[in-house]
Structures are given as structure tokens and as C-alpha cells.
Image (cartoon, rainbow, N blue to C red; front, side, top):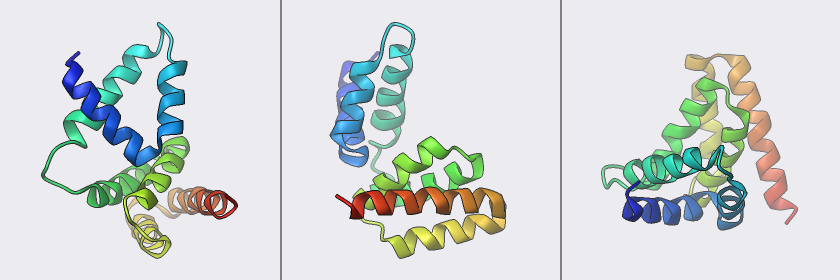
Amino acid sequence: MDRKLYEKGLKIRREVLGADYVDKAVSAADDFDRPMQDLATAFCWGAVWGRPGLDRRTRSIVNLAMITALNRPHEMKLHVAGALNNGLSKAEISEILLQTAVYCGVPAALDAFRIARQVFEERESV
């Protein structure tokens, strides 16, 4: 693994998803899943999120749409929080999820809305 790419990815991952979440995920990794944590950090966050072609806000928009299409609730929760950290508003997230209803299906979009609401409520209660 490229250590420089890993460190770059770890920095971006912490900034987008929050240091608490990322540090917990990394420290909880064991021999079984550490290779996956390393891969995600270096490849997804360092090599891809670290590219200059799109800003983080745009990457968040794309991720919300794709994660809705894939119906991945755990990742949706993380990336709604990340989208807020990257400057998206609740209204913009709503529009993205409405758009996904047309192309990904209403059930997937309904689940995404439910999860987004949970993230908003959790943030407002802090």
C-alpha cells in the first residue's frame, strides 16, 4: 500500500465523515477487515476523493445519488452527514433524493429520505 496515498485519504476521510467515526473504524479493524479499511482509505479517499477534477461538494452529490441507487443505508447515513460537512443544505439533499426517485425508484428514494431525516435530527439534537 502506498503510505502517502493512505495518509492523504485518511485526512480527507476524516474531514468528510468526521474524525470520530473514521478513527473508530480504523482502530476497530482487525486482521480480517484491516485490508478493506486500508483499501477504502487509500483508494476511495486518497486516489479518488483526492483528485482535483471535482470538488467535495460535487462528489457528495454524486455519492448520494449512487448510494440511493444501490440502497446502502449505512453508507447513506455516512454520506448524508458528509454532504452536510461538504456544504450541501437540507433542501439540496432533498432535491437530489427527489431526482433519484425518478431514476432509481421511489422505494429506494423513500429509504434515502428516511435515513437523511435521521441524520438531520441527530445533528439538531447535539
